[in-house]
Amino acid sequence: MVSTTPAPPGGRQTEGGGELRNYEILVLVDPEADDGAVGQVVDRVTGIVSGQGGEVSSVDTWGRRKLAHEIDRKTEGTYFVASFQAETPAALAELDRVLSFADEVMRFKIVRTDAA
Image 1 (cartoon, rainbow, N blue to C red):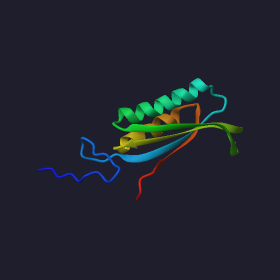
Image 2 (image 1 turned 120 degrees about the horizontal axis):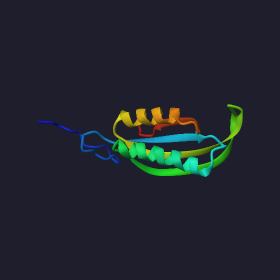
Image 3 (image 1 turned 60 degrees about the vertical axis):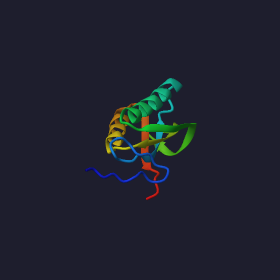
């Protein structure tokens, strides 16, 4: 007999018995990329999360901002933040792999937003 613990308050129980954890990803896109390229990066992130059994709750595009320091001789970048839930570390590994190879992505950071 398999015993599963219930999801924490605000969490959602998955079919596999695990719980979805809350994450945020901040992505810095090359300022020379057009709006279509930024949209493709957003679609890529949401597609990977959804494909791994997670769900994206919000995407907030911050637009073009001045950088605190130059990155590859660029002083500006286009930012967006996405909040999502994922069950497996495989979703995070896939996001890391895909965004590392994307030429239009200058930097990105994924953080877990659950209470520890």
